[in-house]
Length: 366
Image 1 (cartoon, rainbow, N blue to C red):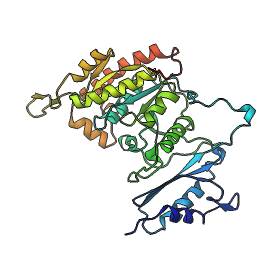
Image 2 (cartoon, rainbow, N blue to C red):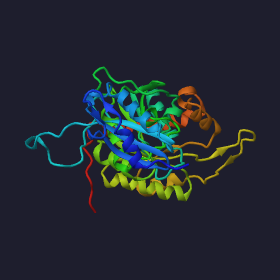
Image 3 (cartoon, helix red, strand yellow):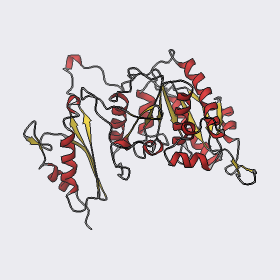
Image 4 (tube, rainbow, N blue to C red):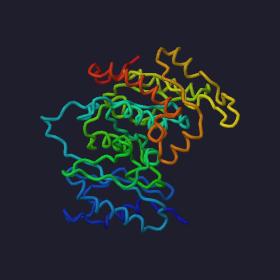
């Protein structure tokens, strides 16, 4: 089957009329970031933030118009809040904004140098462990391309819009305020956005969500050291970062890169978590170090950061994560939750030390 072209998508969108302005969305310049790849289409619909709730039908109409085209496999359209630039005399010098989030006392990044090390599972259970210790916690799924928090936290449906139409209301699960790109698009819909679009989506989830009053916002970053990670490090006043790795050398090489990225932008690294640290056979009780053991502890010692703890490779942790029943929430007194609670205690102590003394990050040129 022939794939749809960018011109065909533009032509279809040119037939969608904005009822408020009486013209089509293309001629009005509302379409941005159009990407067409192998039948998968993605684009943004630029609107005034005050009109977010009222423009949702227009967003759906744009998606429907493109979905009718032969060769289209999926369509992802998102509303992008846009403001007109201030007059020249009011404009500030160009540079990354480093504004905090009103009501959020601390922002914690959970990162990894590579995928597949259990970073999201760690972020979810760490957030729940901090809440279990009495903190008001939010959870942001900053992995734009591979959001997994909705499944892990048993979240469904699009988030509601606040009464003023300017912000999204976070979903709540197990006492946490949660937001994820996975709540805005279908689970099977591929995110084919270029870097700037992903960065814009992240900034909207940070600053255009009604987070309320939180002691800490835990941010599950995508793996690696790309645009999203750098945006978080350079434009958000991060209180600190936690690096997740498995014990083997190949994972620790990438973990070092992630750690050094935060250091270059002057973000404190609270320490390293060794995930999948060991395996206890449930039948015979024999312990196996499937991926080796102790590599993260040694790396933390070499790099001068804390070793936050080790989490075993265990089917219970995997099953509860896949089933939307995180182990800290459903069995907080069990042995698996104990590992996360111990890590949370160390992270909480560092958050307390950092709170009030954290300055906006700066780029260190070497």
